[in-house]
Structures are given as structure tokens and as C-alpha cells.
Image (cartoon, rainbow over all chains, first blue to last red; front, top):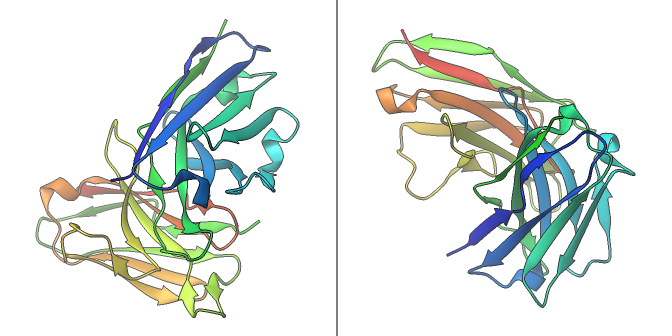
Length: 122
Length: 112
């Protein structure tokens, strides 16, 4: 079954950087695009970024462009989110999400990990 | 960007009664090539990640009780809980996946 395990969260000072990772298993990772979504305390989920299955394309929410970078290593079945110039408002649980479309078909349902908490505070 | 707007923001329903949540998208999420609506409903309980209940606007996820149903097409969608149970207390989100992902603001469902 699909398993997504995020790691790398923690406490970071404003202006600092952090990289969170998501290790995937239970499916053919290199055939699926991947997303990062976050959820601030008491707020709804918020999409951040998407990377195509073959790394050919990356897309970002406007409010993280230039600060966050999504990447993946298909040999390690892992997707990353590098976060720079962090602000207090970036405090959230960060989830990786498997896209519902493979290279060849779409199934309608995303899969979510359990998330990793990032706290930006001095 | 596609904006998703849910109503109401909160809802108190008696046990066994019907709960209805509406979701409106700022543009159609119906993909003409496959005639599918790229709309999902999620349930989120405290301290847990969102859990998918419904996808393709009306397809119930495996294991989800049949008291949950989704309907609608184009820009207007509804999640119905036909007979509210205590374990259904949660926040419910609609989400479009026609263009990246955007979520409604959430509807908090409580017991009256």
C-alpha cells in the first residue's frame, strides 16, 4: 500500500532554512508527480508546489516562489522541499502528497503522508 | 487560480439528522475529455491529516460509510451526511484538482 513518510521538520529561526523530505514506498514512485501541501495551526490546507514524475516541470504557489524549491530523487523514491528565508507565518505541518495521475492514467484520489511540523520562531 | 468557497462555515446537527455542505468553485472543474469533475471531499479530525472521503465529486473512497455522498458538477458541489453519527464530528474540506490544488476554507460539523 502507498506509504509516505515525511521527515526533517523542527524549529528554525526566522530567516533560516530547512529541508524536509518525504520517503515513498508501495508504488512506482518514478511514475507519479508529487506535491507539497501545508497546514498552519487552525487553518485549512494550502498547496505549495508540484514536481512532475520525470522532474521536467515544477510549479509553485505564488507566495513561495523564490523561497521554496521542490526536488526529487527517483533512485531514492524521495521528494524534498527546500525552504529558505523562513518566516513565522511558514509555521505549519508540511505534507507530501502523491498525485492521482500516473504517466498513463488518472485515478482521482491523492494520497497524503502524516506530515512533519515546521516551527519558525526565535 | 481556482477559488473554492464552502458554506456554511460551521454546522450543528442532531444525531441521526442530515448534514449538507456546499462547495462552489470559481471556474468549472469538469474536464471535458473524460467528463469527470476534479473535486474531492476530505474529513479532518483533530491531530490527524485530512482523509479523502469522496473523489471525482461522487466516488466514495473504499471503507467510507455509505451515509457520506457527494454530488454536483461543473462549479457547484454538495457533500451530504445522511444520518450524522458522533464520529462524524470533524472539519470537512472540498478540494479541486483540475489545476494544481486549492481547498475550501472548511466546514466544522458539530453535534447539536
